[in-house]
Structure formats: structure tokens, C-alpha cells
Image 1 (tube, helix red, strand yellow):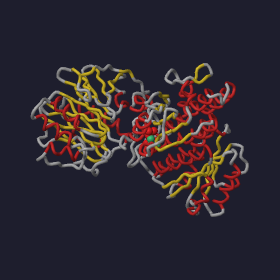
Image 2 (image 1 turned 60 degrees about the vertical axis):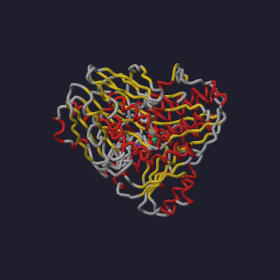
Image 3 (image 1 turned 120 degrees about the horizontal axis):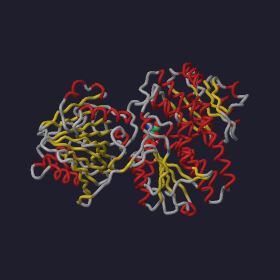
Length: 604
Ligand code: AGP
């Protein structure tokens, strides 16, 4: 989604901002822009398409500047709508993430101004410019932020001012300084090249940096007072941001999964027992009568897998909700409900809104997140981090499997606290979990077989993914991966649901991917496979290593090593990730930055 990068300092300003925007590219965008301030003039360059097409701008002399990657919400993908936006006198320039909800009422303040874009952003520089007629730049911004409604983060500069000013209310913004150089970004990851310490700006705060004096102030615009703020250390694992010898980040991230699972397990195990650190008050688990999981997309699929684990191991009712629906459904939540929010980025607007709703209703909110310092981390009561490292590919892979691992550990912990499992049973589960990374490596070694399936079917237009029990959410995830990156229409269903509708789609052109492992519903899934074959359908099966029967029915089989049923999703998902990846690659798709998608979905 939209990204902000700003810089003030003595180095090549244009180049640093362009590099900053490139590091935000993975978030997804359709246009970009940059405004560079030199002495008392501002040079503006905007375009649709990629930052790499920037041309001669890199030679502009400037001491500070702001840059933006735009993912269209208000208005089409056009140069006019791309940021930075400016006032009628071209004095104030603003880059903005989020949505301003009360633009219409604010236009009263800027009567006579002509708007050149369809964006909600343009009102901000226009308002600042109006107030600049009465007060200095920082005071003008203070007046404006109090008028804005909605979620936003923005950075503003003015042609005749030394200030770089950032505001946050709901959308992330962080800053770093290093030897007289100052950086502001909407994404902590983009600062890793410059510093290991950052200022985390909270909702309702302004950052006011005077480039001439190198003084930084923080201002709480809810309470109208200056506040102090310290730099905080962060470590996002710089090597995760390098592509190495891989063709795409997604492929690298698929292959990183065994090591990230091991890291996540190591981080939460101490002397053979589960230890989440002192963030969680385990005694509260005794009182819980119900668990509600909220998440979006792939994280929601992780929640669906956890529903099976929590219900069978803890014997507690669990509901898994799309965060976007949960928020507006007036959910029945109370102090005895544990709400678990799952998010890779920690910045998903729907999930953030769901957490706020749950907290208002008195629930304890416990989050699983991959990004330290993110909004979800800061607003939750407790957090367990997945140790996936930065995930650059838009299609989530290693974040998903590490989320699963944390959720499984959590299910074991709660089961132990509530005397559903004893120490010996927990140890047995942990032993099987510790075997997963090595088994996953064996699945990853099967690449050639996946490629031959890809070659046979990469031209299809539709695909069906079916699984049962704990592998039904994996069918959903397989379908999501394929549609996200290859643009093939794909649907996931519980295998038994096929006969209630989707079977009408089966023909010789539509492959059905069955997850058909040796569990309690194995025979029933085999029957479903037969039903597809009877209609000339193509069957691709993910099956357990020693399965002798499946080869006689399916057109293609990918075998996975044996594990206990509960843990099979860790292994069944890998062939589906690889299949989606190789099909998308063969179709020439932009795998790490699929069309229309964003890594962090920061609008509701
Ligand atoms: C996953 O491949 C998707 N890109 C998307 O569905 C994602 O999982 C969803 O937007 C939720 O993101 P989050 O985990 O960062 O909250």
C-alpha cells in the first residue's frame, strides 16, 4: 500500500529518497512522486508506474525532500492523483498514507482554492497553506491535524521553511537520525540501512524536525503539549531483505521456512518447556470461556487451522472471524473472551479496528505478529512474535507457517494450564513439532516434481483446492496463493462440500488439488477423488509418503513425509506454495509485487 519516505541531510537527497521508495516497493503501488527542497524552491516529480523510471531527477541539488509510493484509493491511477500534493501557491507539499474522511466539511476552510486531483490528500497542503497566512509552519500543521478525521500519516515540507514535519493518527510513521541526517518512513524496514534505532511515533503525535538546527521535537496534538521521546533499538534481520541467488523473494521465503520455524520454536522453548517470556499472564487462561480469533487473508487461514487445534486440545469454543466483519457485527465479547489477533505486518487496518473493538468490549487481546514496533504490537495486551524475519514477497509464506507454529504452541500452553494435557503429552507434541523443519526440507527437495506438474497445467484458467479437517484451511491457502500471484481463478473448499456445488465445474480443463493425507477422513477424500475422475477431471494429490493407493487414482501425486495429523498443515502447504510460485513464474507474472495487491493493507 502507500509508502512514505523523507530525508533531510547533506548527502544526495534525491538518491536517498529514491532508494527509500525502492525499499517500499514490495508493499505494492501504482504511482510515485518526490518533492525536493533546495534553498527556497521545491522541485516536484511524479509519475505512474515504477520508481525505476525516474530519469534525470537524481542530479537535483537538495537538502531535504519527501517521497511517496501510492496505491490508489481515492481517484484513478494518474499523475495528478499521485503524491506529493501541494497548495495553490505551491508553497506546501505533503505525502500522505491513510484516508481523510471529512474532506467535504474541510473544504469550507479553503474556499476559492481549485482542486486539481481526486484525492483526499490535497486538502492537507491547502489547509496548511491557509493557516500559514497567520502562523508559522509548525503551528499551521498543529492546527490542521486537529481538524482531520480518519486514519492518517503524513509528512509535510514548505518552500520557505527548514522544518520537516510528520503526523501520525492510525497509520505508521517512524524516524531515525544518524550523524546530522534525518530519515522518516512509514515502514521500519526501510530504515535498516541507516540505523538500528528509531523514534516510534504514536497516534496523536507530531514529529517536528528543524533541519537547520538539527533539533527534533515531539508534540502530542490530542493534549496540545510537547513530549519527550527516546530512540528505541530494533533489529529486523538485514539478510532477510537481500534476495541472494533466488529469482524472487517469494521463492527465497518458501525455502527459508525450515530455518524460520526452528528460530520461532527456539525463541519460545526453554529447557524443553514452552516459555513465551513474561508477556503473558497465564493465570488469565484459566478464566477464559471462549476464544475469538480475528485476522485477514492468509493470517485468517492460520486462525482456521488453530481453531481445530484449540478445540481438540483445549476443548474450548473457538470462533474465527474476518477482522473486517468482526468489527461491524456488534460481536458478543466480554472479559471471559480471549481475542487472538493474527497479523504478519501488524499494520492491517481491519485487524487494528477489530482489536480496538474487542478492547472496548473488555476482552483481553493477545496478538501474534511478525513486526516489532508495529501498531498491533503496541495496542495489544500481549504479543508473541513469529521469528519469520521481514517478509518481502506480497504473498505470505514463511509468516504463515511461523504463525501456525506459535498458534500450536499457544494451544499446547492453554491446554496445559487448563489441565487438558500433562507434561508428558506436551513433550511428545513438542518432539514431533521439532521434527517439522527437517521434514519440510524433504518436501522442498521435491521441486522437480512440482515443476513437471506446473508444465502440464500452467495454462489453466480455473482450479479447485480441496482438503478436510485441519487441511481444509490449507486448501483455502493454496487457492489464495495461486490466485494472488498467477491470476488463475482458484477456489478452496472442504472436500466434502464439492458435491454440494463446485462439482458442476469439473471437466478435463480444470485441475483439482486434493490434500489427501492418511488421516481419519482419508477414505472419504479418496471417494471425492473418484468423483472427480469420473467426470474427466484432473487430480493433483498431496499425499502421505507410504500411500500405495493414491497413485492409481490421481494424475499427479506429491508425497510428504509422515507426521501426526495435527502437524500435517506445515507440510501440506509447502507443495501448494511451490506450485503457485512455479505456475506464476512460468506465466511471467510479477511474483513479488502482484497487480493490485499490497503487503500491508492499511486501509479499511
Ligand atoms: C497473503 O498472501 C496476502 N497478501 C494477504 O491475504 C495477507 O495475509 C492479509 O492482508 C493480512 O495481512 P497481515 O497478516 O499483515 O495482517
